[in-house]
Image (tube, rainbow over all chains, first blue to last red; front, side, top):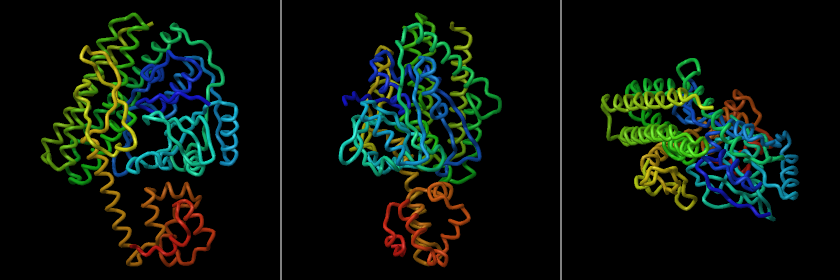
Length: 334
Length: 133
């Protein structure tokens, strides 16, 4: 079948955009999908460690952007999970034979078209399968520049990867797409922003939303006691969550700024532009903090004042993002 | 981030993809641009791998001097921990820990060895014969 590959910053947005464009919905862009799905977030989960570093996320739970965006746009999704890999394979092949491109959840470790350096056991990646031949599947992976292929064996391993967030063969495709009107998008923007405001400001406790940034800052301030090596791994982990492929840069903040900019045109509301600018500034500050953190794990910056400088910068970011989301709340968008 | 500030540093993305980033044009409007990497995060990724490789070297030594079985080494080589290996194999963690002991490893039947070998994507022979080289 004919499938037009769309490259995006983030895989989840990318699969939505790719599958919807295939259905002729051209209005949807990555920033819109991200904003309608209230994708921006911050959370620091203590106790949980990932490769020696903290579990930190700059975006909402895997799958949630997808769910919220489809709900807002009244798109019906057909989704399935499987216990038996063979049944999962048969179902995928059947859909492909019906000329339906299918979104699949996949474990990154088994995707050998990625460079080895990136292949960790992360199971919430998303890609589109749009065909197959004798040797394997034709894959449109949204973070890749171009389409690629994956062998039958690797596809099965990826779709049935085990561990946290195991995909269990999870696949999905839009079963019914109604016309998407500007009014629906406007409505979605209002809802999406409101939800994001709540996520960033209202979650009780000190770990989620802007408060979470302050929590991480406190941890960073005390990091020097743990020694250079552990501190380096800790900060490196933050940077990878913040800047690695899939984020669009600056911990998804630039992507959100692009969303607010698009929202101006739909909402005919110039006030949003100032918030786009402010969240851009927050993204720039995140990038600055990454540069300083790199100084620590490259062994260039080792004094307590260097750790304090990073923590202070994070508090500045916290204040900036508080300003953005409390300001958005005050707009009382309708 | 301004379009002109987008880093184009050599990184592990080379020969596999360029990543899409959101950047501001001169007039402040947003557009997307491809980047081939950024030194700052390359160092973070290199650091993480250095740590993994250090652990692998230690594991090799432990297999060589007979304190750990090959299963332990190949678990780390597959970037797994007990939790992940337990999910893949269906074995409880304490059972896997027992298989880390060379004495118990020597007694494993072919079915169990085959299960591990399939998970690690190696042959049963490679698993059995691994001496920590």
